[in-house]
Length: 240
Image (cartoon, rainbow, N blue to C red; front, side):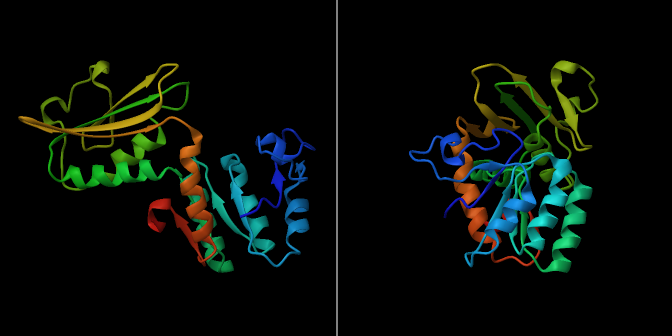
């Protein structure tokens, strides 16, 4: 894979290789005009993929522009609105162009989600404990996704204190009694743990992210897979 262009509103004119701490400059300047970049690289015959880390409000137009130049898109925007995803899905299906919208690029996070779903059929108590080193929106999208995945499966969790309003017991997500506890402490890794229990037994699945490099295997997988798609796929787990 090769970097073909870089778009941002910061460090405009700087070489993307130097900004990314690569050993050598790539002689590719950062530009703040997406259409200009897409136009300049669309002339080559190589397969091209646009990787979008932009704000949720910009995603729809970005994907439309990439599609107009015949490029697939990988979108990593954790807090993208569902109405945006639906609109993009209709657009990509009509254009027969592949797009992956990934709330997470962490393969470990996806495996945690899958393990939690498997365990949810066997336990009647579950609590989610998450931590982040700095302020973000809580509960995080990861916690909400786990709660959503193990809800509506015919199981009602934590029956013993389902109705308690004691704040120390955490926030209940959804109507099935899944509780989440969130911590913000400098120095902590970005961590998500799911505790399942029944009398005499505790089953725990946990995932820690200590460096953003952990997202790279998922990103590379997404780039390789998206070029084969002819529609929008939501969630990297569908391509694993």
